[in-house]
Length: 485
Image (cartoon, rainbow, N blue to C red; front, side):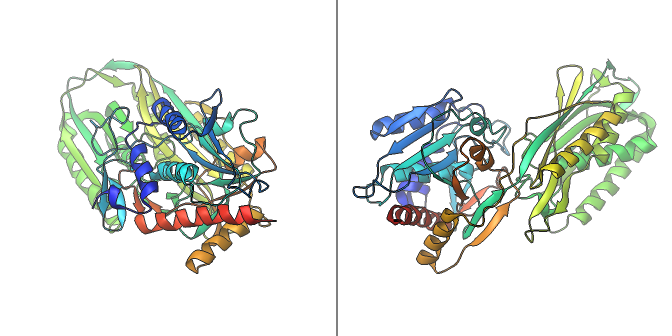
């Protein structure tokens, strides 16, 4: 069985087309052109704004012209993570595999976040069997790395009063609120020196972690490769003088890092002790994550002497800062049981040019003051370590409106079709809804979608039966809105 055999067939067919179009964050030119070509092919009115967002519009079903306009919203870009370092997301299509009741990709992120939302919206645009009022479909750019499209949505792009965000990841759940977030970046400036000739050099590497979404999966206790890397290096630095030549971990601010590595040297006489300490470290970590991180691999191999190393003061400051930096859940919500209120993700460590090391972190909270509190804690820690620290603009949370009319309509639609009353929830992951509300404060909004798991990692997968229920809920919701008097 392939994706072409799945139902609803037109939704999966469009999703398959989308997955043949490269769409990394900040490089959405090809997927934007696909959308414009789609609109032209189907004679759909379309407009764009200066930042690159696209809005398509279709008229109401005859007789439903007086219904409120509904906006269907999804984002164009996808997180690009692969087990194959040679995979080029800018030129190569995503290869999908039907694995029982799940659809996954061949060693990469699937792109269902948020390709399935795009596919459903586009399917509505061309399905003349549906009953609906006026519909707009908004496709935003750069949601994953900066919410750039939502933050810069052009004036007059939307006329609707109801917005259905199609970027959630759990069937039978309707989301009415989300956390706000901010990125904190920390830059270490270092001096290079020639690597000592009398040292023995190792490459320590961590790979195969589960990773995952730094909002949706942060509470699951998965390993952070950057934290494990720093923990090992810190243990060595307390007993041995180490010379750090290379360090790299994680990639994206909103993904829990799955892999990291470092190249370092120690006095040759300490070589055997390092190997023994490594073996103990591996045994400890495997015991701590037994039954959870079953694919996690740690290796220590001898490597050639590098040409340069980082100065010793910066090496120690960096290791100590990474080791002591907070990561994970900071507090749980007192209002909604099981909801993470505040968290932080030690996302990536990168060497930039020949004299800088950039550490990227991401903070989230449904309470604005707590968001900035944890961001400032991260700032204070890295400033003490001598780094230069900056914060991004951040994005606001979306406060739940339990009196929302569209919340009740979407809930009724699902219950009518499937006999289950969906759970009403808020989500710790960020959504674009808070930014839309700033520009269009009259919008009545909800978010829903099919079941996705392990998004932002190569293990990302989508539950096929949930896609049909997602489509049914979406189309029935549009019909009920059109029938409102």
